[in-house]
Length: 306
Ligand code: PSU
Ligand code: MN
Image (cartoon, rainbow, N blue to C red; front, side, top):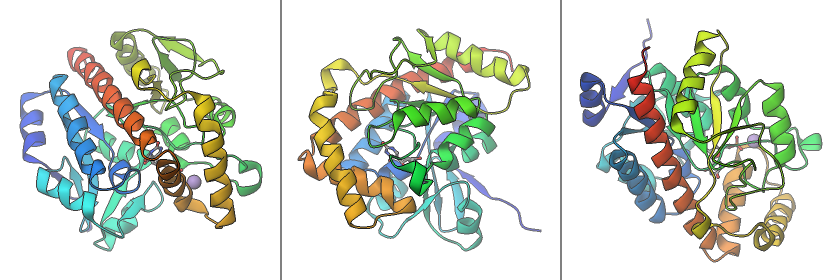
């Protein structure tokens, strides 16, 4: 029989023994979302935010064929510098484990692993969504369908303007995923705190988000929730500044024939270059902000009866 080994870090084992609140973190943002060494610094800062918020961080990845829940600093540092790491989603996580590979988990794969490990909240930067031109390419992230079936609340800063944000919201609605803007009506646009689109739902406190999470389960509705947490205003980049850069990056991707899994990492890297790195500063601020809210939600969940 083939069994799945989940390797919990020492910090996570202790957290589980003590019943402490835990926040899952993805690893694709480290390997495919930001350049080294900023990626490692950010990974450490995000973990620190979760700890400061009174919860325990669980960064998730597949290392040499084993599913890790929580990475120690050596593993985090090795992963941040590794080359040729696979980008894992629902389709390929099992294959990576079966073949002894190393892979970083996307939002979809992190949700699957978090749920297996009994973790209900996960904080990241942005989710994958419906790409511009999806009517031709059919490029729709598996993250959206994962939100519809795996009961994990995902805190993200909305969806990037590299995506077709309107179509992304439509697919989430079709899939029955609650999209909750935190503390405002507008659906946040990643580097910008607001967009011209209204979020379907709004909540102003972690309490309501945690209770809604549990009540979905009680209703027998599968799936999780998307919490769209706006970037702090001091750190935002106006949408108008970014629009031409995104257009350029998207055109470059098309000109180079970038397809499938390579699209999102290519666009992120290209926008980083075109903004001389300022997109990254905003990206870091919003991920840390999401980690803080994730910790708050995890604390409330920990205080609710199961
Ligand atoms: N959006 C970001 N940064 C990221 C990603 C998305 O702002 O690093 C990563 C996440 O891991 C997400 C994945 O799950 O890209 C989506 O990839 P795709 O579009 O290929 O589904
Ligand atoms: Mn895709």
